[in-house]
Length: 169
Image (tube, rainbow, N blue to C red):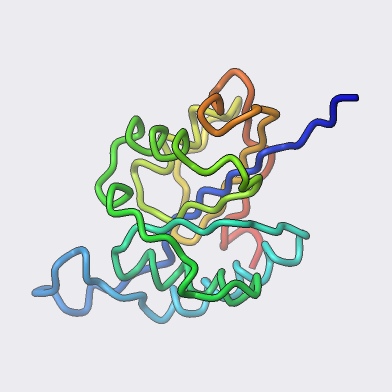
């Protein structure tokens, strides 16, 4: 008997970041007040859907990693378990697809934390409806019946839900 296990990928754009310090490197920008408000709320909302990610993978940029930490807390995952993937920062859509293809197959549900415009472009590869923009702290849920992350692609995966702060908070 074949049992189908759905693979679930969540693409989460980092929460709103601060531009208060113009001399700060882009990589080092922290969350601003709205980001610090939205991240725990969106994390709680996703946890409330029954999502149970087994792996959190984040860009090491401060704003993305801080966002990931709020989600880790909401899911009861130790923040030290967040995998920092340097290639997410400034990645092309093709690089994000490569990262997805190299995810461990024992993790059925994975969250990637990263940046635009790349995350919007990746989301649109799996969506039948055009997503104009994944906003800060926006969540795109993509589901697939692929046997492995390596075979996760547009042919077997599609956007199942989007949660955007202005629409749900």
